[in-house]
Amino acid sequence: MDAQDLLHRTSFIELGARSRARQLLDDGSFRELIDPFERMVSPWLARQGIVAQADDGVVVAKGTLGGQPAVVLAIEGAFQGGSVGEVSAAKIAGALELAAQDNRKGVPTRALIVFETGGVRLQEANLGLAGIAEIHAGIVDLRRYQPVVGIAAGTVGCYGGMSIAAGLCSYLIVTRETRIGLNGPAVIEQEAGVAEFDSRDRPLIWSLTGGEQRYRTGLADVLVEDDVEQIRSEAIDCFRKGRPPACRSECVSRYLHRLAQFDPAAQVTAEQVARIYGEGFEP
Amino acid sequence: MERIALEFDAAMPARGRSLAGVVGSGDLEVLMEANTSARTVVNITTSVDGFRNVWEAVLTRMLGQGDLPAVRIEINDFGATPGVVRMRIAQAFEALAATPGV
Image (cartoon, rainbow over all chains, first blue to last red; front, side):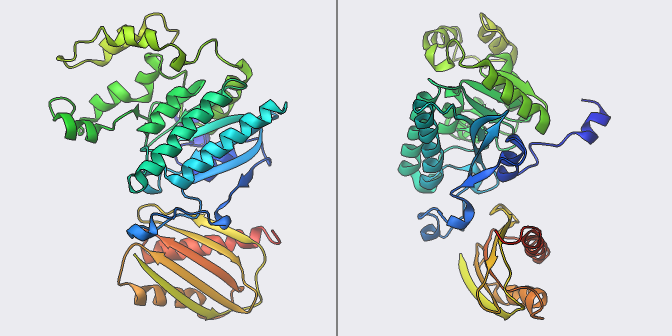
């Protein structure tokens, strides 16, 4: 992207969840479900002395995408680190279930999930985790009918149980700025020591868990610039391609085979991962 | 966490509703809806305790003249400075004026 392109593009990363959803859907088709004025807030945060947000950090937007019925589920990364609690998880899972029901009735509703999340909201612990499990089930159900497309843009990244949700998507669109991982760098360092993973070493973190590396290693499908128009058109393209021959979660033995090639005693390098994961994958 | 409720005289009730901001670090969420009487009611939930007089001063300067439309305002604050508070409320009033009769 040269300087002129930079000036003319609209950044996706700089937008909040609601604006992201509005920009992804076809012009004028955005209609929010369980909007902030319904005040379906977390019942758990206030009693722990934490200020709640009226939409619990998740925007559910119906509309059309490329002329087809669609629902966008966008997580607000600025609220509690994009963490997923009981209410926000139920909003996402419920929308996925309704989209699958639509498909069973012949309405080809597709879902686009915008991941900007540290994973489960620790203050809601088991209820959040149970909700995330429902999201996983919802994605696996819906992707039998229509592709489920995930977008991880940045800057929070996509972690914890929600990184599993991203992995379950039929297609995953990433930017260079995002990071995807089951555990965040600080958690790995805390549990396994700085020799295992230095959470202040940003080049190391991005080289192993950044969007570009996830794309090189076949764990993401599309690498995009931070540009609203490009992200929207790539999402439409993914839906146009239809269901992939096999989702990543249906190829477990391939991944186990790759994992078996690593020596856990030695620090892996980005190149080594790219080489081993690159085998047999179209980048 | 502290809850603060304030009330001000206002002009004719507004129409519609609007939203501005996010409950993120140094920011706040403003939900604005039409009120039925010529009063503006503000309900604040803030993560920072002990700043009631600052909230009163900031909001009195914005709403104290009673010339803005009557609204119900809910504020969910996550440590916004007075400048950010004023901008978010102004933004919500502007969005309200742009989308009448929702």
